[in-house]
Structures are given as structure tokens and as C-alpha cells.
Length: 254
Image 1 (cartoon, rainbow, N blue to C red):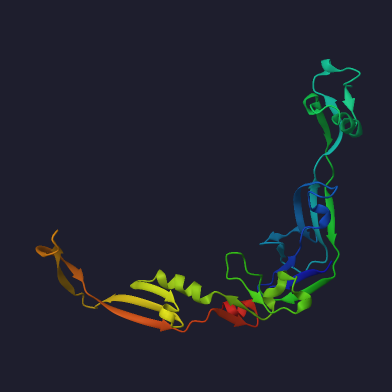
Image 2 (tube, rainbow, N blue to C red):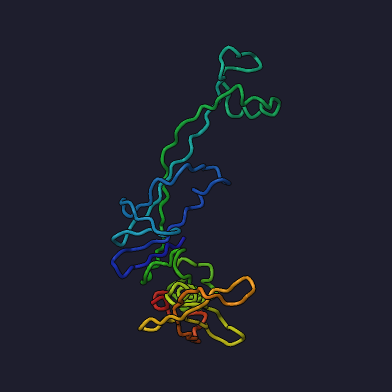
């Protein structure tokens, strides 16, 4: 299986190392309790997001180690006093399986005898395809829609190095605008007009106020009241596109 490597501008080497099929559970005979290490020439690698791992040099040997689940070697009576012809002191896995078809509560009488298994190792034997660029975007970053050749549409691990676009620029900027000072309203294609529309209420440099009377129950103004700050309303229409295109994700993100 081809291994994809990224030569990062900061000097690191990033490798895409998916879990090998033999380590995936359930569904195969090798039950894995945990992945114990991902190594470059015997040295632990730095975990990035997804299946990406980093090291400080170009590796010549990439491996993943895993701890298999203990193997069940037999079954033993929990209470030795219950031993009989029907329930022997010990059972092999096959005997236990045969008896369990006739006695559903067999698990109450026997405990499994398990044996720890040695750590197993998978070697990524390449070939290695080396590319140059930054690491793929994390789930928290803007995502990338690449214009991949058809033959590469399933190779998402390095699609950020191909031409494409980041979607949602207008939505992203509208969220930014809503958190800015004096912004009163933000909308897209307001009243059928294209673009992002921003309405602001801005106070004067020299603050101004005006008197506003309180209103009585009958709707008539009272002698009491309060001062309110006078603001100037401004509306801006920004022709912000919905996407940012680039030759690579890094270019578009910048």
C-alpha cells in the first residue's frame, strides 16, 4: 500500500499511516486491545489529526505496534465443589462452545482462562510518495474542496495540495462582523440585493444625547424621561464571494 509523506516547510516529515486491516476490530481473528506505538526508525512519532503522524526526519522504516487481546485458552469451574461428570473442572474452548448450546447459564459456572499475547508489529513497506506542503487542515480549520483528478478522488489525505477552494467565506465573515463593535445588523442578499449587508449604529466623536420622555399608560408623554445617545446609521454592502480559490489550501487560507 502506498504511503504518502509530506515534507513540511518547518523541516518535519508527515506520514499518512492508516491502521492496517489486520489491526481493525471487530471482524477479524486478531482482536486488538490498543495501538501501542507508531514509530519512525524505532522512534515514537508525534500524533497529528486523523491518520497523520510526524517525525523530524525522512524515515526509512515505518511501523505500528499493537497489543492483541488476551487469548482464551480454556474455562475453569468457579466453584470446585460443583465439579461433576456434567460439569468437569476444566473445559477447552471447543468443549465450552459445545456445552453452551445446551446450557445457557454455563457462563455462571465457569470463568475464562486467558493468556497474554505478544505485541504484534506491522511494517509499512511502501512505496512512499513524497509531496511538499503544509499539513492537512484540522477539523477546526476551514475545510478544502479540491479539484482532484478522477483517479485521486479517494485520496483525501493530500487533497489540500491540489487546486480547489475553501467554501463559506461569506458565512465566516458575517459571523466575524456580528461580533464587531457598533454592528446592528448583518445579512446576506438582503431584499434580493447580492452581497453581504452590514448596518452600523456609530456614536459621534463628541458624544451627543437627546431627551426621551417616558410614556404613560394612556400613551401620552410624561414630564419624566431619560437621555439616550445619538448615533449615526450607516449601511455597507460588501461584494464578498462565497468561496476562496487557490492553487493549494495554504494559498487560499492566507
